[in-house]
Picture 1 (tube, rainbow, N blue to C red):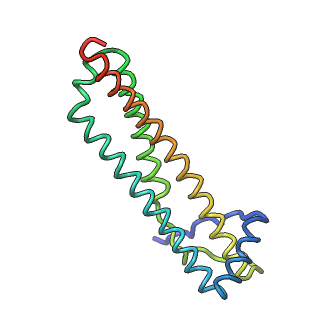
Picture 2 (tube, rainbow, N blue to C red):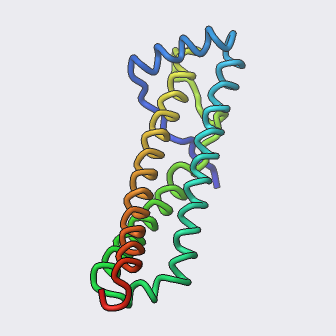
Picture 3 (spheres, rainbow, N blue to C red):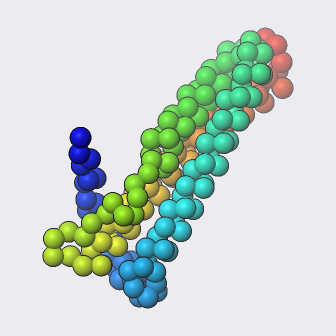
Length: 160
């Protein structure tokens, strides 16, 4: 069984510009890669925070959810919508931001040098960053719906 290398990224001019800058600031390939690994670490850490918040929301729902859902149609629907968004965020986090692709798996395209290699990694980082933003938006939408359900419960109680 042989492992296939991941497909190459498709960097654009902005990725190449940043690659040149990283190579200059990092004083070569090694420094540029260290800077990029630090940036991937930031994304990883922030994704773990989102996952923790999502887990807390689901856990709290296990305790208070049934009581809030019994209080009326709006809290029930808002809580269900919130849970769907939180779960969607969690699934995207697990399959997206937290999915690992090692920096050593990247290869410069034929005829490309350090800049082409770093540009591919920058392209991958930017895609992960955009994905993180989507995950964050889904989580925020879910939490907003969940909070709306809780507020309705507090304001109107049973039979809202």
